Figure (spheres, one colour):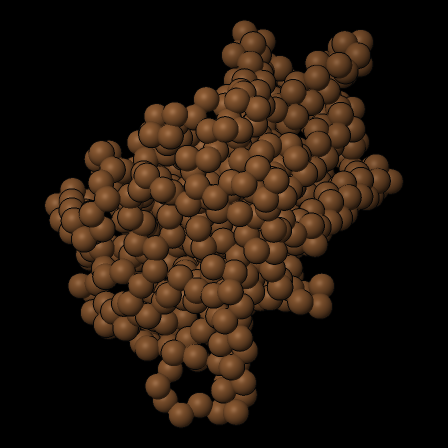
Length: 535
């Protein structure tokens, strides 16, 4: 709380906004749909069946599917709200239908016998008697939405899931709790608040009066006002909209590089920068910059060459970079800028204790243990041409069982806790030294070059030529030890991202700096020396 208090507040506001808007929309559609099927019974199976089917789809799959859907898809809050709305539909439709159809038919007949119209029977008899069941559906929908909304950060929607994903990636339980605890508290408070609204309406006769619709409107209004009151995008860590948007993939180095681009632009232009970090894997970022939902991010030449362009991996770094620049310009109308100065290749990693015990130094040595060990790899590494299939062929690896597929942060946890024995990580990860992990040397030069290069929309650079000039100043300025030092500061020392990046940029400034800034630069220099020792 002391270190991330302001960001926790902002992320909580974002989370509440997502939940409030999605549940409000679901109320406006789900309850009328539930009422409709009570009057048109033949519609009940398809409508409730659709809501049931949506619930069976994994939430991450829905978020991923919506990325490519026009209008309502992409990245950010809109597709997240659509996904959460779909998940909130089932309890609202089902409970409304069950509540209305569960009213004693004798009571309904008595109302009609008193001369009530069908509409009067609905609002003065059935709806009030069913309201308890309907409110229960609202409570379930709200609590479910609070939990599912944590996954929305994978597509750049923000919320408390940012902390959870960041904590998993950095093996930091404190960060995981920074997202999980507020989310749990929010779910409990939402459940309590809806229960209080239900109690007030019961005591005030809301079930029996024609003001029942106003009670539902009150639920919607409370949620929206609460979200608006809490949400404040003024914090620098918030992915608020700006003149341009910078994105990143979902691991520490990418977030560091995204913040580096953002601060470099802010420091050298008059533009405001929105941050859309932790966007998942390569293909999400690529689609986002192609469609204009972000203006730029940092890619790796080998990933672009083999993963995006589907070319056979080659070892010539200069040729790869030139081919990527040419193809991105012709096929995607994207500008690939000069390398930032370092390469982040795949790293096949084992525990330090195992490397020492079995004398493992090169990837060729891994063959001796492969038939007894369990590998753990990421989704992209399993599928890509420059990933596991080619690695296994090149080094003749035949593991004891098929690789476990998991996120990078989970791979580190699994490796440290002996759930797997070898993983594919990144060569510049700051956690390698902290967790006593050893990178095996690629002695057959299997992996292609992975130079870090900024990728920007051509339209953005033409509209804001000063952005090109600002980013060009970073060309060749970041060494492997520099980026590992920044990664270590975030992963190993749990320091705020923006602060780490500011220190690095201060250390590279040629201007006369204040004593405070000089101290920051000195601090970064110490971290850089530590990283060099680890390398």
